[in-house]
Picture 1 (tube, rainbow, N blue to C red):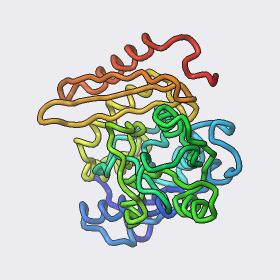
Picture 2: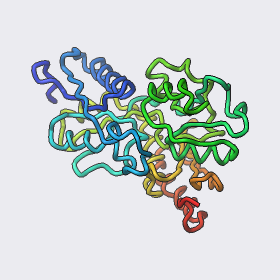
Picture 3: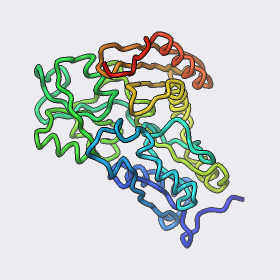
Length: 313
């Protein structure tokens, strides 16, 4: 029988310290409490500051990419300072450090991007030359492909920081993940969700993953009870696509897998950083074919991309 957490030695849940990260950690804890009939005292939330949280004055591409929001947390997990780690899956590198794995995904939230502005109701309403803030290369490239007249500026920080920048007039609009706004109870700040046919989301957007040590049987049993299999199937297909593309925060890549009956539909696209060219395709297959579909779709897009496709022009 697997040992359950004891309030005297609680299960330590590692997370970043932003309001959204804490909301995700609390959701994970609450689902574990409900699944196993455990009290809140059986868990401890451990806040870990990452490089991405500390360095806010430079674009992500200048300081290292996706691992910026996970490295210190994974080090704490490897060293045994925490027992599990809660992550936004769109921040996760496609490969985990040796000895760590993710085999638990919470039910996926709304995958779409949210259009946020104090002045305009949609992308189409933005006037010629309007300033739009975003730190996401994917969003910037997608927007530049659709509206090359807009001026794009760097816009880093958590949800609250970016909303404050809008108030201060740094930009007239920005984009946030609908999932994050939903988890924070802030959906009212969005003028509307941008449909995936208009802006394909980041790989794994809206999904929370819980990482553990591969050798930890107690954590494996606890987490198995809250794993959401449909979300896992979708994210695994998208991350296989990203893995083959060697995707990072330095490359504009979008991907989305959706379950349609007993079939899995996977759409993907790669973009030039300036939005000057978009290469897209999709695959349809069985629910168990996600990884192969992701790899195959990536191979097609790579075969169609000219040399230097991801390099700034």
